[in-house]
Amino acid sequence: MRYPAWRIMRIWLLAICGWLALARADGQPAVEIVTTRSASGQFTAVAPRRTGRPVAFAQQSSVPGVFILNPPPAANDGSELPLEPSVLVISCEKIKQSLLTTLGQSDRWQGAINLRINPALPADQSPVLEGDYTARGWNYQLTLPASIEPKLLFRVIVNALLMEIANRHAGAQSAELPFWLVAGLTSQLQTASLSTLLLRPQSNLDINQVRTNGFDPFLDQLRHQPPLTFQQLCWPEPGALAGPNSDFYAASSQFFLQQLLRFNDGNRCLSAMIDNLPRHLNWQITFLEAFSPHFQRLLDVEKWWALACARFSRVDFVSRFSPPDSWHKLQQALDVPVEVHFSADHLPAQAEITLQEVIATWEPAQTAAALQRAAESLILLRPQIAPDLQPLLDRYLATVQSYLNDTRPDSAAWRAKNAESQLAVLRHSACHQLDKLDADRAALRPQYVSQPAPAQLNARANPQQ
Image 1 (spheres, one colour):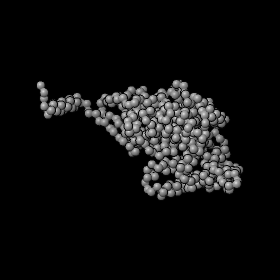
Image 2: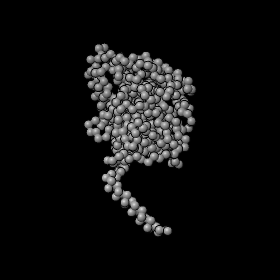
Image 3: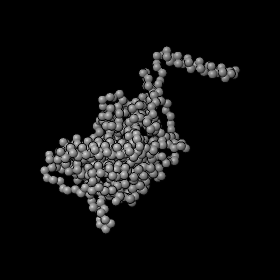
Image 4: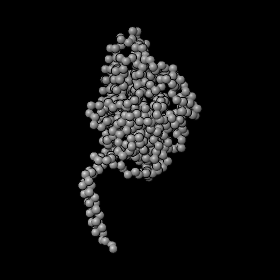
């Protein structure tokens, strides 16, 4: 017997109402799906919320498949960070902005990253990153448990962001990310500003002071043995990426990355490499193309890296510098070396200028590169400097990083007013803060230096001169 459409619809509605009544009679509350979207719109976090048993999302496979998180997660150290959608998307935006600053890029995202918090996942379940390719490009889904170890969360977000950047101009063939790139950038960002990037839900007093338990600066990992070789970074042994060896691999990767960024065009070369990864089936070819001004063959990279490791190993990172040496090392970290051209028929003279002169006179892109190198030098110096100078170093570092964050083209401070007038305000404020720090440092000088420091040529110069 055939029933008319209206009767079929009525039966269906009655069945639904009966099911809802049974659910209420059973005493189990309905599932509430909480969805939060980030400020830029790139991240959307979704999680079920109910007082009863955890509710699992339906497992769906993506096209073309599942990405391997790179490197694979290490063993959990017992430190758990509970995940809530509204807080998670803020942390993701913070990590993205820090990553873009390191790469010298602005925010031009194309692929959405959907964060699915699944309370039904077991505690030892690794996060899963899936990519979905359509005619409009790539989108991503990252499935996470309800709580996660902070270092692991940090790395999987960096992994997803790098994948999104690399695949912006890719077809159906996804990019291959080098192990050292993900590990090195993750370690670099954690060292510089982890305390302000990962936020903890329902925390009022220490929301900006969350630190990853057990995470030490990468120098601590390289005190007792030299960094890994270039071959070991490119093709790591399985045991190097998990367990107690994972921190050492991350430390070696971070040092390798920092040495690349020390090139004058290091940020540009690294960004070009990431953008062009989908063009080749292996990343080594893309690496050589991007860093062609510095390397012609992989053998050249190995030689350069061996020399960098040899120089690094000559320094005793266990002992601190003496007070006078600490004073002069801090001065060197704050000085910006330049070449001054007095005339066309004379060789350029080496000179040092202050951070204030860089901020006041250089173009924004050149300023950002110089300040980023200064910040890295301060981070490297901190474990070795005299303890009494560490607070002053930290204030210099905070001022430099604050200026870098405020002058990003996509930052809220930059968009608040007209770009030119806002830049002038930010320049004046940063120079004023650095002048005050210089005055504080000058007042401490008699405690550290008994003899006058060697005269330095203080020249106002443009690096393109």
